[in-house]
Amino acid sequence: MYALQDYIGEDNLNTGFRNFLDSAAFREESPFATTTEWYANIKAVCPDSMQYFLEDSFEKITLYNNRITKTEYKKISDTEYEVNLTFETKKTHYGGNGEELDSPDRPNLLEVGIFAEDAKNDKGKMEKVPLYLEKIWISPGETSLTITVKQEPKQAGIDPYNKMIDRIPNDNMKDVEKAK
Image 1 (tube, one colour):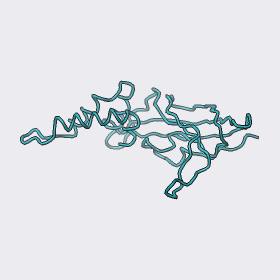
Image 2 (cartoon, one colour):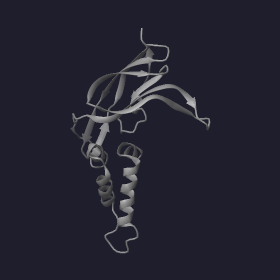
Image 3 (tube, one colour):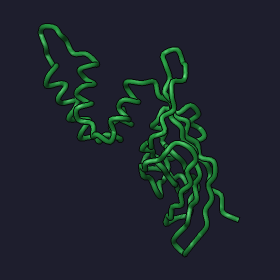
Image 4 (tube, one colour):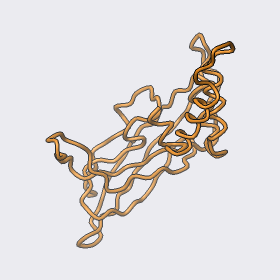
């Protein structure tokens, strides 16, 4: 649900929930509310560009295989660092018995992040400090990006907060090495 809110927008999701409640709450006779009715209300408010995400999340068994393979940075000025990232992405649909059905080759909207050293929040817990965090359309396969940030980077990743259901989520992040 967190990924859904993030990808289709909190206002859209709240509108879908409100429409569902307005149409289904306190029915005294059948048909009573169903998940199909809930889904139809969410689908109605989902932007066209994100319909694929809704279908992958609710109509299909979809697993991602996102992994960062190389990260390095170099200082380009007193206040700027150039970060080079290489990562691989793949999305696979499965059948109900675990059989692989297909691996679509259309681009997916995935988050890419570059982070400074972790810091304590106001509650004393460690948290990530993003220097760059953007959703970008990425085609399956290997992708390389160069991104400039304003502080020395420590980690970088693809889907760094693991919003997608990933087969091996621990390989989404990697320490950033200084270029030689």
